[in-house]
Length: 157
Image (cartoon, rainbow, N blue to C red; front, side, top):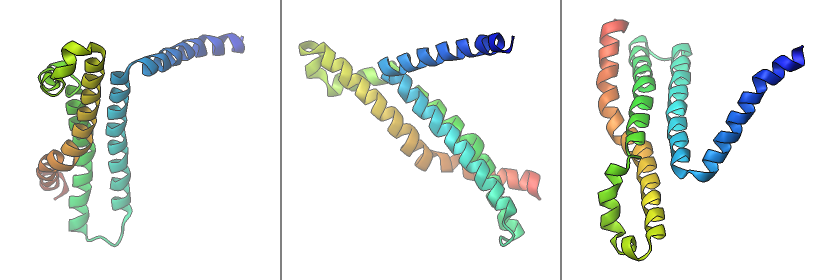
């Protein structure tokens, strides 16, 4: 009886994992989506752990602790949203078509397979660079700092 129950639960999971592995093997865009989602999840987890550590820290002054806590919560919410949202937006082909045609114009007619690979490589590269570097290091702090100040004023005082 127990064996049948375990088999009923495990078979769909195994089939789903096999489909996922096959999709990952054949589709680079799928892999980039997984990487972008993983980066967002990692940022969320990292900021929540930092929030807990700041909360436990007895050496920090209370005023500084309130701001750092609100900064970490703001960053935990906004970082995955912005990173994942814009990272997945950069995977859209409408954005990359004009840029690909501009950069790889000579391969479009002579070697369409190479043009397709170059276009895919550009899409993967720009999506990861945009999500990991530009958004996280340049754009995100412009939103997180005001959000942290607002949270501190609204909920910590």
